[in-house]
Image (cartoon, rainbow, N blue to C red; front, side, top):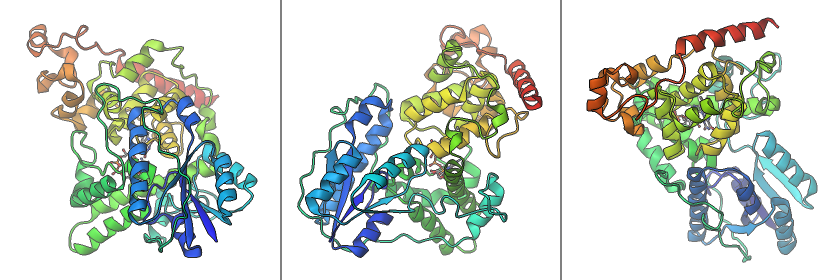
Length: 471
Ligand SMILES: Cc1cc2nc3c(=O)[nH]c(=O)nc-3n(C[C@H](O)[C@H](O)[C@H](O)COP(=O)(O)OP(=O)(O)OC[C@H]3O[C@@H](n4cnc5c(N)ncnc54)[C@H](O)[C@@H]3O)c2cc1C
């Protein structure tokens, strides 16, 4: 009998749970991918992510073909295309890996309800999902520290190789080129190449540096984090492969201080934590987890167009914030410290609506993940689960001084500030006129004055939160 493995975001053969299961139960397996061109026309997507996806899909097909198998690609709507292939092949079962956002749940439910064939879904994207880790009274966790204790204690599955299988001869559409899908590389964009080979290289390279993760992960100019997030997004590397790779590093060096490894594994636990949050509290995609802040009066981008543009384009006059927003525009990725700083700034300093921020990040991030994004944004806005308390407001200047003390990160991304001396790099508006001239950076002409007074905005924000809390 024949099985279909509907591949969506687990773009790998190795340790792909649905594929592993299908190959155990069937000799003939059809790895199947549907390209919904309509989606590319209507969704507003940034080039780095689409390009990463494209590389990964092409490479998956090559890897399967190298092993005498294939990835069958069809253009159209998933339900219709799956139904067609079931009819063409008489397949008796469809396998797929579960996803957890409200959008994915609805899509998958519709497919399950309408396919005239047995369908089974699997946990693959995460170590623990849905309601696997619960409080002692049986509720989902909304506080990370308690959740993580259980996450670390639980046994974790190891990666698994699929058994051999054959893919029957079937018509497959060409993977459309990026141009055909309507995408062209914008000038000045740096592209991260996708695909499993790059993901595995990245993981190998990070294993050398994982010991220092604790010390370097917050230094914006350094390559101190794994940069595996787009690989987890597209499943070119599995979460089990990454976790167990870090465990092996630890086991090989039993006498070393392993706090860097533990901290990195904590991030994988955060990832699971936010996946279970979006599953158990799906309303948080549109509403704050702390519902009392639902009507706190953020300003939409239409209501505050100048602030919105300045933030989005990295022209707020606060160098660390601007560097973060420009890194995003240039590469599709932003350092975690910066994600926190720019989002705190859009909230407490600019009072911009978090939903607009979410929409922009969803378009731009190479690793856009609804769960982590909603979690991160609501944390910075002090409206989420386990959030930053509203009275603890990030200072955009001292954040830069602490996490980019010599300004290397700022200079890399904000070219106007390239020649500004170190003593002024975090507050360029303090440069005397002569220094501005020498640095080729006239404030107000080459680089903006700060668009707000941080101390004033901080006080206003705290007051608004206090009023909302009392309502
Ligand atoms: C406002 C905001 C928005 C964010 N949006 C996303 C997003 O869309 N997609 C995304 O993957 N991450 C998001 N994060 C989390 C985090 O910033 C990124 O996962 C991280 O910067 C990716 O870089 P890395 O792979 O080098 O991470 P590493 O530091 O090497 O961490 C390893 C992995 O752990 C996971 N991880 C790390 N931090 C977090 C976190 N705080 N929450 C959940 N998972 C985490 C990621 O999968 C990451 O690849 C967001 C954080 C904030 C504050």
